[in-house]
Image 1 (cartoon, rainbow, N blue to C red):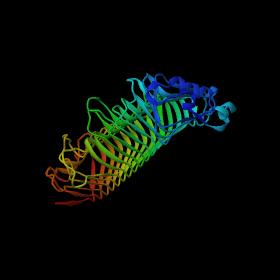
Image 2 (image 1 turned 60 degrees about the vertical axis):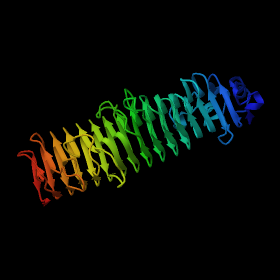
Image 3 (image 1 turned 180 degrees about the horizontal axis):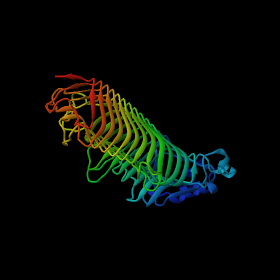
Image 4 (image 1 turned 135 degrees about the vertical axis):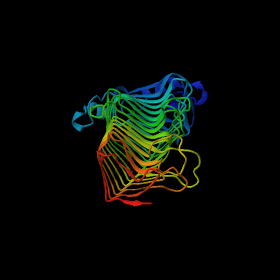
Length: 452
């Protein structure tokens, strides 16, 4: 083990220790030990794995701190692997010299406006464990290419722009679990462009990644651009923020749901989601399963979906505890979506709305919609509002007024341009407009129980 102090590092927070670290990386045995101290860096520590060989940097139980006072990453891990993660695609020298670079038990602090934490490119099995990164531009920054990444038990906290940033990277297999990723104003986890597959975001606390002065912040953002992002899970996380302009907790931005540039094949399950202008914002996404989440405080929208295909929204609770105060609209808006199913959801409005909506669940120009076994209580005027929709089945639902909100109009309202709407076997309450409002030629209502 190469102790950096044996190579001349001081760690007093004043002395420039960059040359000492570079000497230790170049001449050490690949296991770099950093004891307690504050180590000043003025340029990136570039670890070229094909030259350095197998590499790990280990802090002293989290007591070691790297103070990055130059532009660029404090640590830059560079590999040469440019193929897939299949065993047959590995050159022997990658296994011998480059696999599994590890950063653990260390803190990185950005003390330059363009300082980054860790930059990763061309690596196989790069692993960050028990790392604290703060005040950097980007906490962990992936570029060009990487395979089989693990971020575990890390704190990516209060960075200048983005916490975990996959920037136009070709990356397959990344697991992010057990981390706190918070107070990064442009985004907690941001994937922008590139080719990303098999991204697992599990069991994290992803909070307050927003800025009231920045438009469009998101705790988790997948922005396809001209790339492809698909195949992954967002499971068992707490993802919440505060209201910010155009903000979202989860935002997926595809480029055509019927194209290769859709955000696709993702599961969002078992999360606590809320406290933003929009909780879930899906654009040109397909094959998304959203189930078993607790959703609250979508100040404008609990969910907004635009031009999406094959979306399942099931078993979710949209509700508040009794001590929640203030205004929050919590509507759902589906625009130009196809082949969507909503099943077994409970949506109860208990707070006054901030945004005027024609109904709690609004569907505009949607096709092939199934709504079954859901409850919408105390809706925003109407429970379900259909505008220019086709082939809609609504069955086995309970829609009616609730306590404290007295603007109930009807369970369902469809416009005269909607077609093939079938409403059956629901329990609905009659409001000021009636119960089920279906203009002639738009569909059929039958076998519903209507309460006065």
